[in-house]
Image (tube, rainbow, N blue to C red):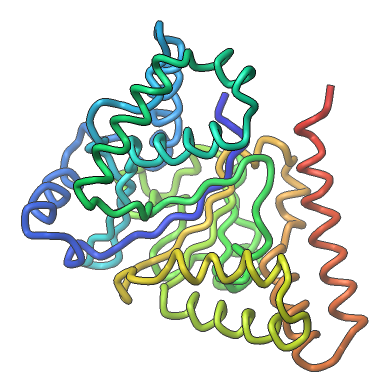
Length: 307
């Protein structure tokens, strides 16, 4: 059972890494033993569960993960390291800040929590960067994420192995390759190993869409929580190699939706239409699109508290 989590990943070209890291990731990409895309999230989850059921719990691994998500486009190799230790540290920092002290010790003993914080602090004192190449969201996809993608970059894989967009003659497969073909990660060509809904785009296009959305939101709403969360995405992408790829993966959220609901989910198209409506003063279009997408995701997020 995978967590009900969606993922926003940055895949940087192999040339963006140091010579030492380039050699490592090139060999890793060719290794027959690395977890393939369809199993990578499950492997990550299994590793975290093993740490959490230990006594005492191991909040973050002692060493950084040597795994990554891999994509190939032609002869170009793109890499998204898992950064499991850093992501665990950052996640635990948020957990400690948002959870009452008396409750947090029920999950992680104070001695283990202090040891984790000290290890993180020592790492930070070395001047290591805190930026991760993966953002996660549980029980929902933040609406600003959809502003990065175009509807034509949506790729849906169902249990039957069919791709409805392809069946309609649309450009369902983005340039990096559809997940049904393993996105160059070694999965058998033409198979559909699991249900998935994924968007993939080039960073340059994503930044242009994001800049437009920020401009429209600032003009019409000024300083607001929606503008702030969208600007946080802009900050997250600062410093990323300009030839990178961006991937939005619904991950475990697909298990909350049946096939018909996944087919009908056009959230990126609805967000784009809402932004266009704001830009052109088409208030009815803006309201209709915004209500459609927010109602969809509020219904999904409400399942967190279902009995």
